[in-house]
Length: 436
Image (tube, rainbow, N blue to C red; front, side, top):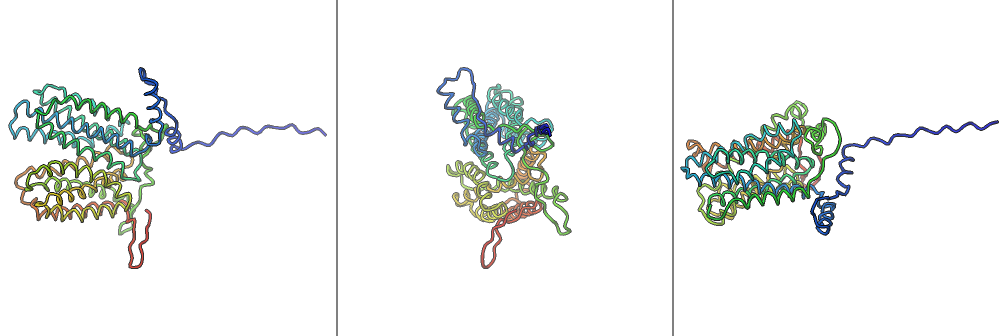
């Protein structure tokens, strides 16, 4: 009896790899640096750095973009203030130029974010947001309109482009968002001081600072995953921030899902941002001017925003936000005569920013650019009421307590509607940690 012929089994195709696996493979693969004219020793050092674990860290990437953020803010603000001094504007005209800068730089960010989301342009926005501020530093001092346009548009483009890239690392942690946004306070403070004092030196060194900061980001930048789909990464050209189905759901009194309340939650979060902006702009009113206050305000804002994400990720988003607003309010309202206490209150007040930013992004996972731009729009809108003298009585020290209470109620309710719950449950006998 003849032996049956052996029929080989057909080769099986390897299983399809998911987007997360493709992203991990690309990020862990060594990157070869083939730059013309680079010395071999320097190239080897840069190669070791580019393939190191730190260079692929989301925090390191956010910190590099934070350096660029500080340089962009310092450049744009310096250019605007130097222009107002060069053409000898009146105080009223210079004031409205600064207001126009804020309205364009922050008010246009939702529209820029929509464009970035629609045509996947975060990196183009980032690069253009660096080039335009550099041009603003070299425009003739008499061209106020050109300088204002380059500075304000560049600032808006950079914030959206860099913000989308930071959100592209995921929405489970708030620390990267704080690390990115925090240095902007230092750049703003430096830009105001340097721009108001032309005798300190020329503005062109800031263009060099922009180039150096951009180089740091190039070394630490993360590459996007190569996959298709309708996830946020496919729309924005970056890593998926979160699957829309994974956004936590909250239940109301009638048991309706969180999608019914997303618009309400986002509106409450934006109200909280606007109120915090209003209160933050009024806390130093009536305080004695000193070097400690001049240096302390930007340093407190930087430290609060940078550390707020780490604190929230450690103890819980709701706990960190509630404790920060509860403890900072007395220091802000009654600490006007004591600068160290006032600065401590400002620091605690700013720690809520990363949670609010990431919460809005979680509510709008398909539109990271719009999600980043909306809080910036609320920020500038919150600063406008202080410009009108008729509202001044409502912004006195005792009334700030009510505004701070409104900010606390808005942000806690908004976070609750998005499905966020306390990370700890306290009882009389023990403390139990829960996960959401």
